[in-house]
Length: 398
Image (cartoon, rainbow, N blue to C red; front, top):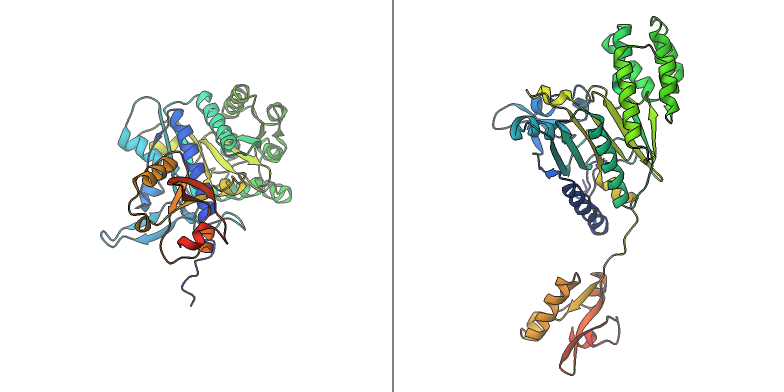
């Protein structure tokens, strides 16, 4: 067995990509902090019943499970950080008013989300608790658009849906749990033949409503279409009103509507959204309202948020030019020259990378390490010169 091989869809992040990811992480977390979002770091492992509380079946199959050697209880490695943050808000902070929290950390999935996806995404997100109005959802959408813009990526569109519409139709039609799940899969895949087959025995007007959902897609006219074709159930009327209010609040963003988008059906409670950008086949970020999760932890709280995979975002973001380094003489060769040390400190303070040379290494080694300049003493003064492979003063010093 090759001991350096990693499991399928698990990989190392090498220096260039790692620094791109870390740069984005700092930039986005700093921006969230400027908007009043407090940073939390939930644990990687939790008891399974706590980890899956409030998430329904959506996270169960994606979660790695193991036995705790101390307690004998089943534990899980988190597949999503958002439910953990909801637990922190409901159980630990226990604030009465609005709470804004953000996070960034690795999650682990039993299966990759796509053909090229990793099973260890680096999830970053923001959550807002304590406000049930569309203002909170609008804040999430604006923050998401700002996060993408800061990453150098423009959101080409943000699809908005509402799980309350499908739930109202399913309840009115008296669907069994298995029927509801099969319809969810067909609607999510926009599989019209399967959808027609699945609703063959559903009573009217719910049969026609389910068939109409995939056609309720597009601009604000999609909501007009929905009002004309869906039954006037109170839950549907309320959901469409919430979508209209949200559309008015974010009319400067590239939003569209999709009432057949039911991601997180067993987790979300209202508005859901997905952001898309050029060069990426699926959604780059997901979010929505999940008011019922806090109740599962013993304290009902309005909640909305979004998250994305920072590693995927870094791959899509424009590559920034890698900063090259300045090579300084080996400290043992300069006898602790104070002027040199002062210059090195000043360079590092200004943002330059300064690498101390070590003895018995070729000039080519330092080129490989990223050095393109060097510190050289001429006429008693230290200065920076272009670092050349052959014929430079370093050929004689190293």
